[in-house]
Picture 1 (cartoon, rainbow, N blue to C red):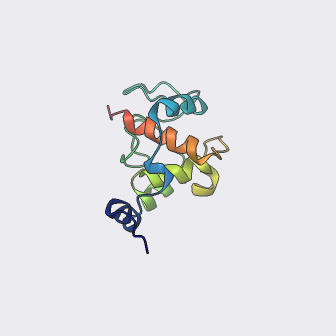
Picture 2 (cartoon, one colour):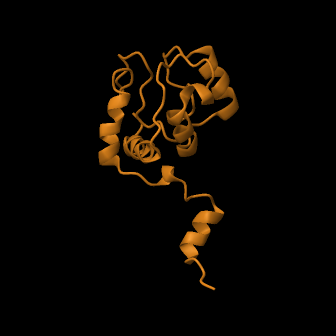
Length: 128
């Protein structure tokens, strides 16, 4: 019987084998084109319809000062608190399923690899 390497076994044990832990930030920058008409990822830029996404991974949900979040997003933030990679993966796959009645008009990204790339890109941009 063959055994998985220790690092793989630890990754499985701690749930770190999901595609959101992989991804290519350079490809993710291209995937961000789905988002750029409503969101900026330039730290500090706030002149678009959606909240700024710089530093989104690990950031509290619905916490950008001065942004008027929908009631649905505020309720979601009260339950979930922080944008983890896993939560961003689920949300970018099916925004309406994760946050029912969200005001965001986006159907989601079906391709798991594209979502992983997008999250890798967003993870590479620091908070302002």
